[in-house]
Image (cartoon, rainbow, N blue to C red):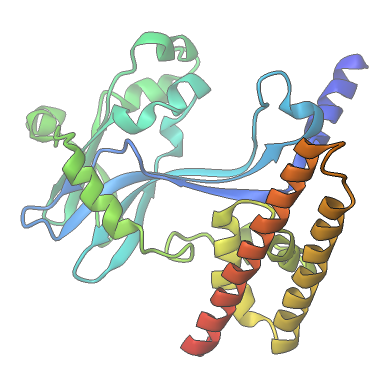
Length: 293
């Protein structure tokens, strides 16, 4: 019973507001011959941050609501990101999962992307059992290819391609790839809020008014939800933000500077930051109107 209560408390002590993570840092990058296309691995995740008791003793653990590891292809000429194939079957245990970006070799050759899982070592090995996870150990003994146009996956001769993988880990090549990916929207990444996180209009608006969730989630709302709101809805967001600003001001102003200087300064900082946040939101609304969205 005690265990059930603890699980319930921990489960209920995560924010009701989602955050978004799209991670490519650490992924190998395979470029084509003329450097106009590249392939890489990305992790997409929707999660909730810990609050209350769930934050102790060391800050707590996030609660993952959705996670996906996949191979992607990006065409610089077409400015197009393509989801090729999921790799979730490779990520079996937490100890191996989080180090897996560096555990896959990639090679892009013409219309084919070759990939091979590297056998885990060190602490990751203890999470793997050849008898309980036979398919995993079969996978790491094989080399695969996926057609970047048809997305068809095939097994290829490992001995032929072992020495042809791109082992280049130069920061410049990875940095160049991230530069192209930085301009992509969350829709480009296949994250559709109405599909992954269907909520009421007022809940989406709360993210903007209260500045909750993370900046990536709020950006996704601006990309996908805000353009569908009426002009009256957008005006209500600004009005609610003005009221929230007054609340922050009253909270700061009611504290005496001599009796409680620290809490007063913290509340003043929150008030000042919210004013800047309102300006940021107004600019985004202005740019939406300007672009005709």
